[in-house]
Image 1 (cartoon, helix red, strand yellow):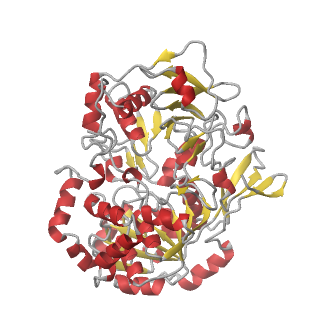
Image 2 (cartoon, one colour):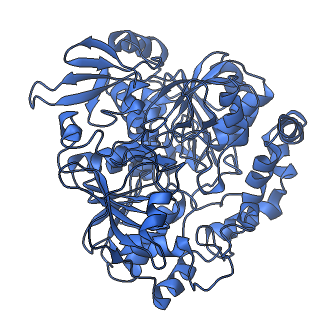
Length: 604
């Protein structure tokens, strides 16, 4: 871990500080550039990009992952061949992948980037980072980015939080630490971030820029107020009387907005909650083509450079027929399909009536108690939580980082931000709400995974190999550092072998027990938290109460202690008596198939 020490009580990350302004300087900018007048701001996407996205600017995209992203603006940025853009990689996936792959973006501050959640990693943007064409300026977590925007929105130079402490994520960030003068404990100071331009896609707004959002708002409340210029793209521009008749739905008021663009289906191939589902065929085409530079160019010629505008793109991807199909899928009137599902997690022929994935889901489910809360991540954690709700924990409260709270999900979502995560929910809220609840102590369990783990439960989801020249660039922290820091108990789900269970991580993304004993609390992380269980395809592990070293609790059926040792790069404590894990019941297996009918995680 590389840190620059300012004094005995302060540490400073080595990441490049982007987007920061002195609050008084920004106040002057607002006075000079942000009109309070009701001005018609409608313009074409071509004009908006030309006027407000100059080369070299810091860009932030609204939405979350593949949800409510303004792809109309992304394609236009590429069409206008903008250069040397910096991107705030806040759950930036399909948008970032295209912008990096096209050469428009060559610097990224990473919270979650270079991945497509369940769909896999991003060939184009990973290749650019691994070859040096795109530089990662700094690391951060999802909550960290959201709170950088919050500080800017509030006109503050920084905001204190408890995330990222003691990790390489902090060491490569632009944050600093100090001793809290009230508690005497270390806190992390996250600098404000004022993007030069933010782009947010909404279901409706008026010509002045008063914009409403249906469902979760993720970080867009804070981002819209932090950005110096804001382009709002909207499925539909409506009369101001309609907006004013339901003002409680207005997330973005007009005085924040620089440009309004009407862009029907402007999030395609991403999801627009309540209107259309992800176009998995199109996303799959990009993932396939972007495996090579030649494929990237073929895709861009077909869907960007060879077309006049976004309306031609919509016609090119299948037009009205395709969009009607996506609307049916969003309304649960038609099942989803995806090219990346073919052959995914197919069960091997054998004696067992269940797969290792189904076993992991059931074991994890058993650990979740009724009337408790859990911070749920993509894939297996979702399945485990949904299974618990359908069996022994009907009142389990699910939190999703993008803002879904307490949903009753009929089927497995693809993303922690898609509309299934706030279906029949207690609340469709925001990332600030979910992360703040975790920091305040309201979330009992947190699910995590990783590419590497050490004996203290520290996790790596950032790089394989040296940080500056990685062999493999991974998505980064995302919400993992926040979950590992803030939830009371974390449950880690991952495959076990000597390449993953390591004595020393290539990068410490998410804190477990750091160096053991009381090092976690001394670093300033919340007391009483940390890893609770690790579940692999071989067994279940806990942690020694004193040393905090990993210890074996149970072996899965047919697994031996020797196999545990053979598949670990460090010594795992083995007690005298080790139990055998209870296998999945037929009822549980039947429920799993209903939860994941397309086999996204458990396979067919």
